[in-house]
Image (cartoon, rainbow, N blue to C red; front, side, top):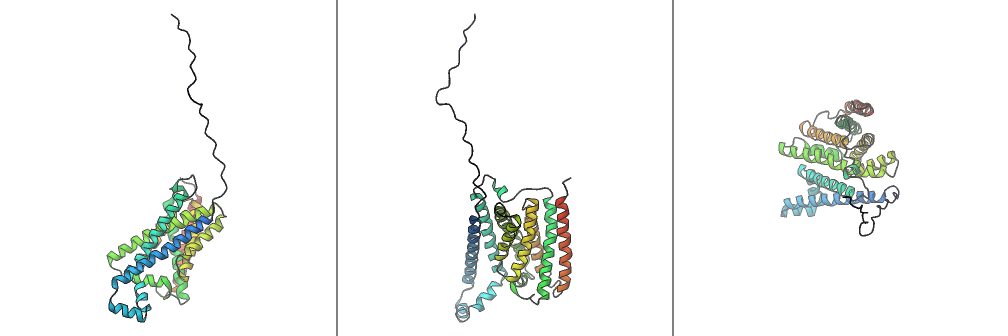
Length: 305
């Protein structure tokens, strides 16, 4: 028996409309938000360091300390600022500030990219090799800076001298804490903020060279010391080049962490090594930088096997 064909009825309700196309991008991202984030980070870091300092002063406060402080505040503040525990406390405050603001700023950026892309946290080919070679280059810059300070008669001046003297012959437990804070913490946090967030955003609006110089200048500014800032500016320029050439901050994080760790261990375990030998430090620095930067340039050009 044949059954008559049945024409399907249209579905009830209004027909669905195709999704509206996304509006075209409004142009490069805004730059003023980057500068606001930087100055907020700078103010937050200063405030956090001030809180750390107040806590340590309160811990040693006594009638005798109060009398000395009222007579000459510098007699209390200066020696306290050179204590390893105070330096590490200030370092921890800076680490937490830069790491938190980098993640928050990247999360709030008006972009369709994932957070790891906004911060250049990509695992690129040979990133570990690039990181090791960049470490060698940074150690070269560090030796150049030390040699220049010695030749200029400024080896016993500035923040670098204070840190080196505070870290000399540290107790093992305190040295381990210094490696965690000054080595691992500072290396990760500063790369997340400066090369990850700041340089990435500025390169989307400015020429890459201009963005690298601006980021390196800000990186130098937060070190608050002429010699230390000059050294940080050179380090920042090299790290900016590495991040731009590889498209990732994993090599710069690796290099920053290893460089800070080696410097911390050397300051504590070999405080008098190469002391007073400015020319030897300069020559060693040139050799290390040539090997590190040249090796990175070669390996970053060679295609992956």
